[in-house]
Amino acid sequence: MSNSAHDDKSIPRPLLIGAALLVIITMVSAGTGRLTGVGTTMTPASEVVQARSLQFADRTDGGVDVTDVTTGTSVYVVPPGTNGFLRGVLRGMSRTRKLENVGPEPAYTLTRWADGRLSLADPSTGREVNLEPFGPTNYRVFAKFLDHAVIAQSGQ
Image 1 (cartoon, rainbow, N blue to C red):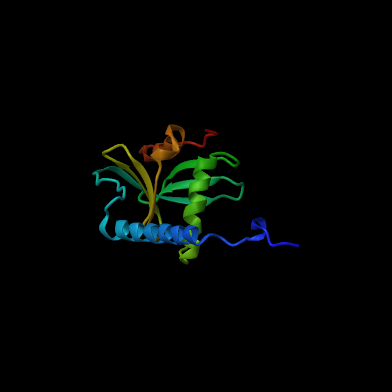
Image 2: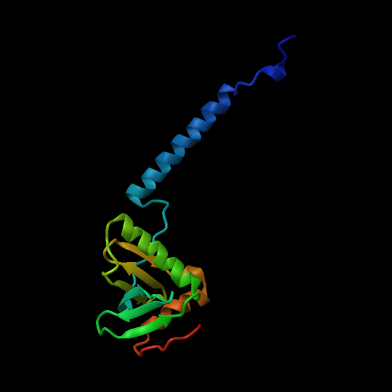
């Protein structure tokens, strides 16, 4: 058998050099952005309009108790099998706590900012989730917890 051009399975040298350069340029750009802030997007500072310290506790029936830590009052009872977005956010925050060996006791801080943002922060791990990018329906799931009244159990 003859050795034809189709049998040569090596990658052309210029293609390998180009790929290596692309990787190097990407890494240098990311490092420069991280160190200097050039080319990165940052959320501008805003004033706190309202904040509430909340604790979320699983119930034996599959629901979730939401409690205002300052007053010790129940803010809301999430019925079993509802509010998938809230459960997903809390699952992610709990995972970070587990990785950092933090228990469920420390409160989360729900904050409404002057620019309209709403965030849920975990001061014990430093993790913060901005909630408005998830849409108005999911935003409202957490926004109702800033109401100062105790909210009764609801299927919403």
